[in-house]
Length: 627
Image 1 (tube, rainbow, N blue to C red):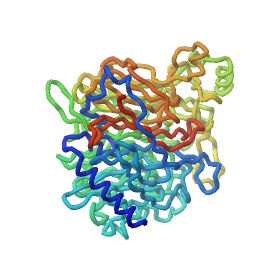
Image 2: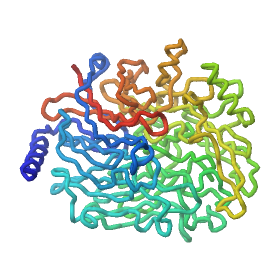
Image 3: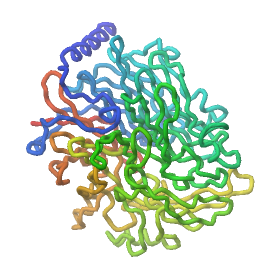
Image 4: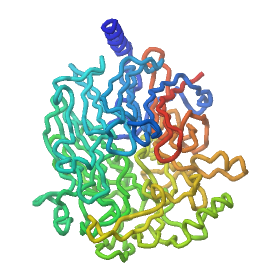
C-alpha cells in the first residue's frame, strides 16, 4: 500500500509539472528572483478587484511550540517564505520539515523530515525561513538547511535524499566551523544561495561570547556537496582586513556571520553577503579596530570565493545592529544613466545604495563624528558612515517629552522604566552603566524581511518598526570572559507589559522610496493595536517582522504586523485597498503566483505568530484568490 501511495504522489508531481504552462508566474527563489526584488509581473489581482480576495485554502503543518511540551524548544517562529516551482509549493516549517503542496488545492504531495523536529536545538527560538531550488536538464533539487547545521539535498519528485550529495544526501556544515566550540551552537535558519553550480552557505552562530563557532562562508559543489572555497569573514593573518582586529582578536572570533539571506548576480557571477556584528555584540574592548568584515555587505566571486569589494555600514559595532536582510539587486536611473546597484537596508534605518560592480556609494556617504563612551577598556570608533540620501526610514532617537501617553497605565510603566535612564541622545550613542535608550532597538528598524523593489517605477518599499531598546553595561567579576556585559529589559525592548512601545506613536511604518532620487514617495503608519483603536486612539502602528512584495497589478502585499492582519496597499499612494485577519500574525514574507492548470493568481502567507511578539503559536500557510 505504501509503495502504491508513493507512486501516486510521484505521478501527481510529474503531472502538475507537465501541465504547468511555460509562461506561468512562479516564485523559484526566496526573494522572487536571485537578487531579491520580491516583484511579480502579475496583474490578475489588481487595484480594482483586490477587495474580492478570499481564503482559497489553508495548510496546517502542526510544527509549532510555545515551550509547554517537553523536548520542544521554548518558542517557534513560522517565518517561512515558500517556493512555487512548476505548480508545486515547497514550504518549510519551524521544525525544519519540508512539505510539497499542490499550489492550487493545498494537497500534500510528499513531506521530508530531517529528524530534528525542533529537538536537540541549541537555540531558544526554532525557525526556518525557507529553502533553495536548483535545476539542470537532469535533476531538480531542493536544498534544506536545518538548525543543527546540516544541508539536505532533496529530489523534488519524491522528497527523497540525493545520495550522491555529501554523505547519503546530507552535508554537515558545522564541521570545520564549530571546532572546539561544540556547545556554542551552529545552525541554518535561512536558505542557501545558489550561483551556477555552486551553493553558497552561511549560518547562524551564537554571539553571546567573544569566541565561538566561525561565521565563515563556504562554497559547495551543488552535485556532490564538496567544499570548493571558504571565505574568512574575520580575516586571517596575511588577508585583507586582518589589521582591523587589534590585540590578536581575530582568533576564534564569533559572530560576523550571514544568518540572513544572500543575493546572487548570475550574469556577473557574484554573491552578496549581509554580514552581522562581531561577538560579543555590546562590548568590544577585546577587539579594537574597525573589525572587518562585520556589519558589511561583501561581494564575492561565486566560483572562487574571492572578495571583489566590501562596504562596512558600522565600524566596531557595540549595538548589535547587524545587517539583517537580503541585499537587493536593482537597477536605478543615476545621473541619467541606468546603473546596476545594491540596496542595503539596515536596522538603523539607513539605506545604502551602492554600485553593484565596485561597491562605491551612488549617493554620498559622510563619515561623521559620533559620541564616545566611558566604559573602561572600550576602544570606541570615533566616526560612523551616514548616507546623505535617502533619509532615514525610522526614528533614530527620542526625548523625555516623547514618552508615551497612549494610556495612563502605559505612561506610568514607561516612566518607571526610564526614571534613571539616559533617554536623549543621537544615533550611535554608546551604552553606559546607567540604563541607556537605544534607538532603534536591536531588532531595528528593518529586519530580515527587508524590502521589495518595483522595477516599473524604481520604488523601494520597506516596512519598519519604531521600537527602542533599554540596556546598561554591567561590570563582571575579574575572572569573567569579559569585564562588562549588557543587561536590560526582556529581549532589551523598550515597551510596557502590553508591548506598547514607550515612546509616542507611530510605532510602525511602510515607506516607499524613489531610488533614482533618494526621496520618499509616501510613508504610512503600518498596523494597529485594535484595543487602542477601540478606545478612540488613532492608529499607532505596531512592531512587525516579515516583508512586502510588489506586483505589476499596482499592489504592495504585506502581513508582518503584530495585529494578525494581512493587507494590500496601492503601490502609488499607500492607500489601504484590502485587509483581512489571519489566524496568527504573519511574521513572514508573502508570495504570489499563477496556478498551472486554472491560470488563477494566488497570494500565500505563512501565519505563525509567536517569536518574541505574542503568545499565539502555530505554523499554517494561508492562501488567497479572487472570488
